[in-house]
Amino acid sequence: MADQTLDAKGLNCPLPILRAKKALKDMAPGQILAIEATDPGSAKDFESFCSQTGNELVKASEDGKVFYYEIRKV
Amino acid sequence: MANQKSLAIIATKGTLDFAYPPLILATTAAALDYDVTIFWTFYGLQVLKKERNLKISPLGNPAMPMPVPMPVFVQMLPGMESMATIMMKQKMAGKGVASIDELMAMALESDVKMIACQMTVDLFDFKHEELMDGVEYAGAARFFEVAQHADITLFI
Image (cartoon, rainbow over all chains, first blue to last red; front, top):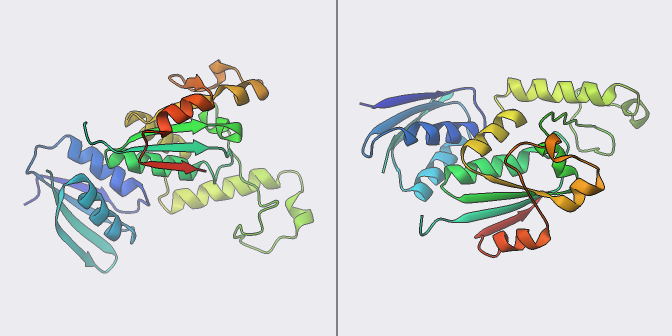
């Protein structure tokens, strides 16, 4: 169960990443941020974001047009 | 942060389209915990203006996708630049692309440092009051002071 959710649907690069970063800033370590996005580029970008910031991408899935991610804050 | 990476960008362009790359890269790098500095010079100074009025023109840019093919002598008619700018802004908003104002606000919020090239400020007779508050004014030597420690340096 996510501690916080972020609706990034309709937003294009780099906004989903910037909004996610902002949301994570106010969360406690270990908490999970759930993100919904429609930018197809976000799939690779969230992987890269997590590998560079140390946050953990615990879930990445796609349902037709919407991409779902869950990130555990480091 | 001890191991913080850093990015130094030289931004030289002042059209609506080319204001994007430095700001997208700067805000993204800041989100990746980089220390970011942008050195704005020549036409890039237009992006630092408080009242920025960035425009885009199809003139001299045959790569710009146009809704209908448009001969060059039509592109140069009065009002075409404003029309192209309005259309591009509408298209960007429709595709969920951030505006330059938004990206600049996010860059400042994430502590991206802005340096304006004093030589080009003088060259174009810009006043410091015309540019955003918090901008540092300096020259090439200051850029190298920043860039020598940067992990990534870009010229845009």
